[in-house]
Image 1 (cartoon, one colour):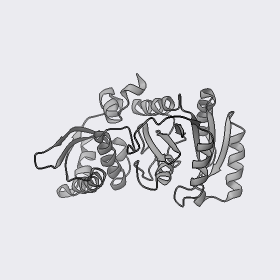
Image 2 (tube, helix red, strand yellow):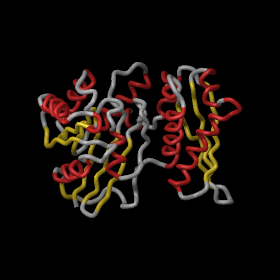
Image 3 (cartoon, rainbow, N blue to C red):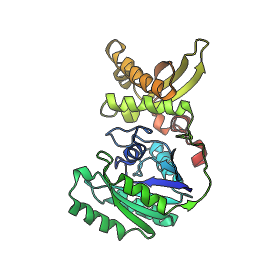
Length: 298
C-alpha cells in the first residue's frame, strides 16, 4: 500500500483545486475562475485499491497586500513542510513570472521531492508548454518527474496519479477509507457559502467577504440547522450581498444548501446573516476563524 502526503504549490488560479477535483472525478474542494478562491490548507484523502494519497490543497502563493494575505501565504508555506512530495503546478497559458521565482525558492528550501505539472493544457500549445517545463526544471533542485495536465479535459490525470504512486513509500493508511477530508462540516459549509458568493458577485465583493459558521445543530425533526455570519467591510457590500428584496442572499443560500444536502444526505436549513466589520482583513479574530488556520501559523 503506497501512502503519503502530496502538497500542491502554485500561484493563485493555476488550477490546483480543479486538479484535485479531476483526480477524484467529482467536486471535493471549491473552485471558481477568480484568483485566491482557496484560502485554507485542506487535506483531501484519495483512496484506491493500492494507495492512500493525502493531497494538501493550499492557497496560491502571492505577494500579500494585507494581514489576511500574509496569513494565507504563511498557511500555504507551512503546508509544504513535511510533505512527501510537492506538486508544483504552473499555468501553461500564463507561463513563468515573479510568483514562480518565489515559489521555486520555497520549494528548494523544503528539499522535498518535486513533480512539475504544467496545467491548463487545453489552453496552450505543447511546444510552448515544453518551453515552460524546461524553464521550470532549470529552477527546481529535487525533481522526480514531470507531467502535462488539463483539469478540464482530464489530460494527464492518470499519468500524474501513477507518477505520485511510483514515488511514495509503502505504509499504513492515515485515515479511514470513507473519509474524504479532515475538515469538519462547519468548515465545509463555510467554504460552500463562500464559493457561491464568488460565483454570484463581482469586483471587490468576493475578496472582501468572510464566512464564519456559528452553529451546526440537528433539530428534533432531523433537519440539520446551520447558522453562518457573512462579514463584509462596507455597507455598500452588504447591500450587494443581500440584493434587491433579499434576492441575492436567497440565491446564495439556496445554492449552498443544495450542495450541503448532497454532501450530508439530509435536509438542511441554512440561516445566513450579513454583517459589516470594517477592515476585517486586518483583524486577527476574523482572519483566524474564517480561514481556520490558527493552529497552522502559531
